[in-house]
Amino acid sequence: MRKLFALLGMLVLVLPVLFGATKAANVTDLHWVTRNDAPIPFVRMVFSLSSPVHATASISASGTSTTLVLKNATLTGIPTSIVMDDGIAKSATLSQQGADTVVKIETPKAIDVEDLKVFTLKKDTVNNKPYRMVVDIQKKGVAPRENYYGKKPVAPVADKAPAKEPPKAEVKPTAKAAEKPTAKPATPKSNPPAKTESKPAPKQQITLPTVPEKPIPQVVNYRTTGGISGKTIVLDPGHGGSDPGAIGPTGLQEKQVTLPIAEYLKSILEAKGAKVILTRTTDVDVYGPHASGVDELQARVNVANGNQADAFISIHINSFSNPNVGGIATYYFDGSEQSKKLASSVQGQIADHSGFNGDRGIQPGNLYVLRHSFMPSILVELGFISNPKEEGHLKESSTRQAFANELAKGLELYFGG
Ligand SMILES: [Zn+2]
Image (cartoon, rainbow, N blue to C red; front, side, top):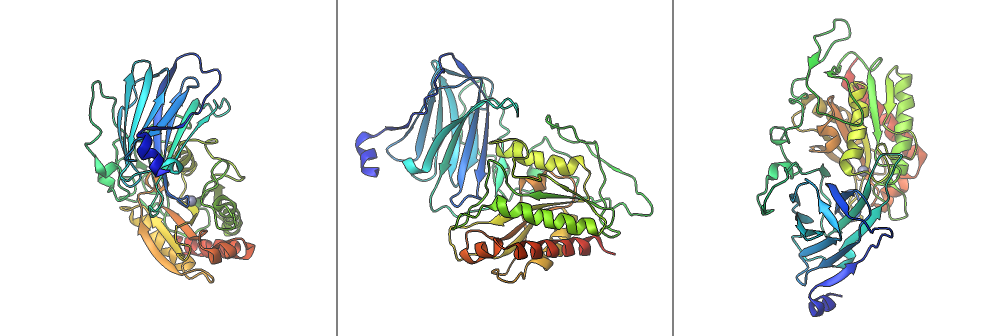
């Protein structure tokens, strides 16, 4: 296939033709997300459109530059220069060339046809989503890293601006709290107020970011002591609906494991007097099918923030290209002492789960659901679905129940007696 590229120089690869795409369309929005929970990590770009478009894609002979042409499509005030994931797809520049929108994507290494996928999504009136064109770029051999979900907050630029100036703090998973984008509350996690059960402390007042889909209360008020009874705990079974999450060697899907564990955990915690809310109770997307990463994750965060949870636990199963890798890890938001404490309590219970490859420790992670939730929050990775042995255990309800018991124990220890 590569030889063919060399011969042709520029090869047209994809032609998603949408019938009825006769009138001019506007390109109204662009989101991107790095997905590291798939067996091969990929960057997904989602273009919102006012109506269907014809599009073509081509990869340069060098393999490091991919060009998309959206025919008869007009850019309308969206960023024309975005910095993405420097491991998979570094940057994209959008330009208006006559009636067409041209998108140029730079990748750090050469990609080929199998690494590029372009498809379209119909208008979704139920979830109020427009027509969308989705571009997935993967790079085989890129080791999975922590998830980072982001919409690049770059303002539209009037004239040509190169894509090169990298405000890296906003792109790297290791970005510190202080370097985060501006549309965020003033570090609610760094000064936990810890209202006690008997004598209520003054409520912590912070300004919340604008969340158009679902208004959330303007007060953050979580409790960290006094036992688990009476606490509000939001559990987030990772993935669901159109998003299977990671998939194991025999086809077990992450979303099929995370929900039963959350359900077991809910009943255990309720028996201990806690109020428990799940972000989803069936196999559905929380925001809507095929939403962008940000919309979907923010919808989950909204459940925790909107219910003024005392703790938020997102439940996931890990995945890696090497099937021998396994074990259990807990992520917390760096800079939140209470989240770190919660992570330690929980990891101490789940880490030595029999049949799994052991303790991968607690790790700071700049994960969307942790960064945007206002209460102590953790994300647990209960083994690797890519590891055949661990996948086998994850199929068993006894394993799921045991994880739920251990998670409950960790929460109980965190809230104290
Ligand atoms: Zn996951």
